[in-house]
Length: 233
Image (tube, rainbow, N blue to C red; front, top):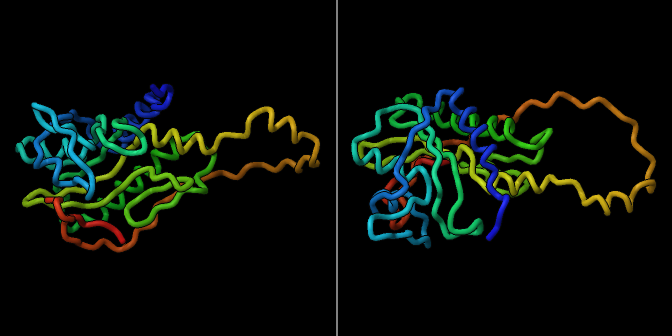
């Protein structure tokens, strides 16, 4: 069993960050109907079924179930759930999911930009980095050192319209921070004295990055996926 991988303190800090940005923290179901899963199930992936329902692969699927049940009012939300997925991180991990449910159509683009930029700001705040020089945002994703930190976009299913995004995914984020780790002490000592020390210069004030946003386009749902995606290309 792997240990010390998920940083729960970082998750708690991110929850407080989003609370300050107006994201109401709500509980969403961890077990939902197959219909809610199929709304966002990627091609080639299978559902984790139980005798009582299907385990969520993301907090978004819990939100979708709540929408379908008529229990979600229009608004700006966050939820923290396990994500039961068969992927490189193992069969489960923890994730904060952001949702803006039924934003005004005229404000759809601005809402999407706010979600992805709030996430970028949060990542900077809870990171171990002094700068986010390696961060990239393109096609609805935020990457750091080639590690995908989150995905973002807009979806519609019938009368339901929402903006979604990753608020923080662990242990993925911690893995990205580990990519910043200095070399082992033995390696550092072995190279001491080989080069003259550089002249110390004051570090510049680093501002959190702002995500660049390409055009939003409406695309049809994937095969087996019942929610149409409005995502960036």
